[in-house]
Image (cartoon, rainbow, N blue to C red; front, top):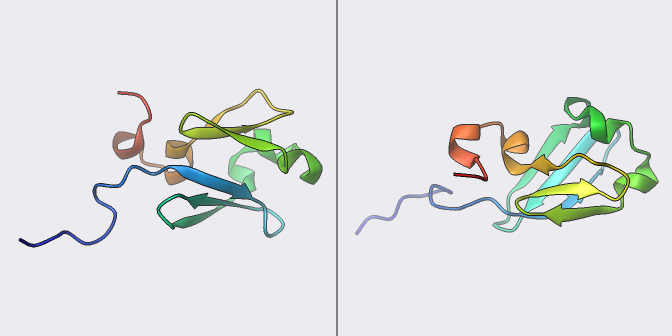
Amino acid sequence: MYKIEGYWDVIPKIKEVSFPKRGKMQISLKDGRIIVVAVSRFPSIKKLSMAQRKKWYILGNGFSFEDSDEVIHIEQILGNVKNYAHEA
């Protein structure tokens, strides 16, 4: 039987959030993928200091920060709500 290559049947789960470079946010997924996005796309994160950004935590299939009321969901990172919606 032929196995389909890639991540077709993988549900993306966040492992780590970091800010390796000015203006960039890196999201590491449990399946080994690493996504780098512009912080400018997330005004609620952009306004946090670097010290505040280090205090992140996973919440469901998203993440937030101790000093923020916003929850960033995986589909906001991947950009395809139809394929990655966290709620059915």
